[in-house]
Image (tube, rainbow, N blue to C red):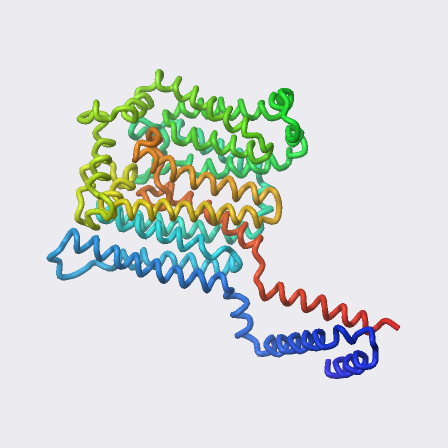
Length: 495
């Protein structure tokens, strides 16, 4: 290398072709030699390459989230037990360690993924644990258990899905598995009806909603199918004509998905999941065809089916009439939503304080109406912060979709982000009576193992796509330097 550099300097000094580039390229060789020396030092450079800038930023934000969690837990504890002389810390410590476990997983399997996603998830999960503990300590302990299950599945997803192309390769397997999980609650002896909806299966003492995993698998299949058929379906782009709108290649899958969602609603007596699945499908069509008319038409089709279901099932009808006028049924079917309105009103702007309110007056508050509990004890400030957190999650997810390497991963990231945002909107909008209640849970915040585990798997896929779409700055500079070095060698070898 020393001989080559000496020959290069003499060549640059005597050849006028190299005069304009002489100083810059010699400096590049100095940088290259410096990096080579650092590589020979060994472990320190390897650690710096492994522990990227994104992960350092993520660790800093996780430390801030942990401090917020500790303060919130202490406020909730002394709010409930003002005269306590000791604080139970074992389970909260286990909960506080989960963001760091996720961070180490990202360092090992997704070092270049986005640094903002997981701290927001950790903040929502930790605050959700504090609210659940304040409402029901036993459920809070189970929530920690489900959180660890979610973290393990998060790590396994990143480990086995080392390339997002694997998802597209097994799309038909995912479709079959998704359909099987969709009908599993209907199997006699396994399925279980809770609160009028047949969405659960019982595994010993535990219950689980397989439809939460089913929606992820079917979403991957939808994305793969429409990316493959993009050339055919893309014929609807361009000038908008009636013939393009009535394209059977688009209307056929759209009507099939509509019939499927209606059947799910009829058999499982649940509006939330069928609405989520159908919206995911029509949003996929909308993103593929760039036609708003399919989005509007699909929503109108589902509204028509939902209105039909109100005449067939009492549970769906109850949600509609309590949304219109809950005060008329304040002592019967509207009691839950009325108590939620009282809780939000009592919270005001700043809230009553953690552990100082009465959210337990709301039935099933830890799962269905935890947003109302947050509104009572943290007020408008707390609920606004939670809404902003979900908006940031959606923004980071869409940024990941924009940086994706191919159309399939971009569509998967967009669909998964949309699912996360829609689920949060459905439950928060239902609590404040913006829309009727749908029965879904608030991601990462509400009590429920099925939703929590599926949300962590969803985030793992988004982080894998983010890792593939982001390249560490060190490797960008190294590649540029290597290219320029080879250019100099070729230039020197010319006669």
